[in-house]
Image 1 (cartoon, rainbow, N blue to C red):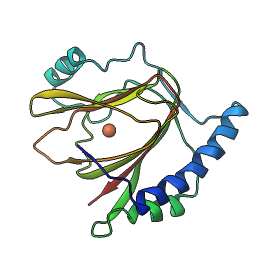
Image 2: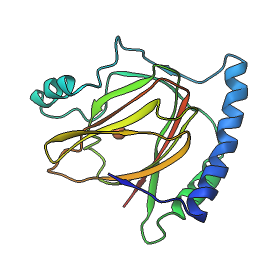
Image 3: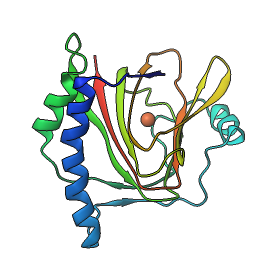
Image 4: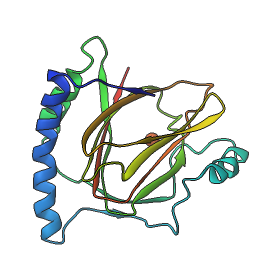
Length: 180
Ligand SMILES: [Fe+2]
């Protein structure tokens, strides 16, 4: 996992996504935050849960989620701003578009069905209240997120499984982009 340093391009993507978030906040105020996924019991984002998940082999998409799917936004505009981050690669799809309420989560999974680089733009309402957790070099690492925008990328490449999960105690937005 790498943190993408802040640049004019990340700032531009952040600005475009700020508008998506502002529109979604209005929808939330109208009790229309989009399709609810979960919750599926208590969040299972600890290392002990990963041990159980790895025994099963692979979990491509986590069945354990508590988030809202962000239904509508100007995808062309968002894709344009995201594609500019890596002009030498091809943006294949928007691979994630979620609003996580406080105590929201996505359990351990690998996305191993879709290889390539994944870039995540994540916005957190508060400092160090949410995290991205991943398994790398036989160790679990927890990346606490800053208030505001966080940009990161990781590669999904078989046969390695890139186990990861997220949890938040504050409002959190996450937009994923798959590059090849
Ligand atoms: Fe994922």
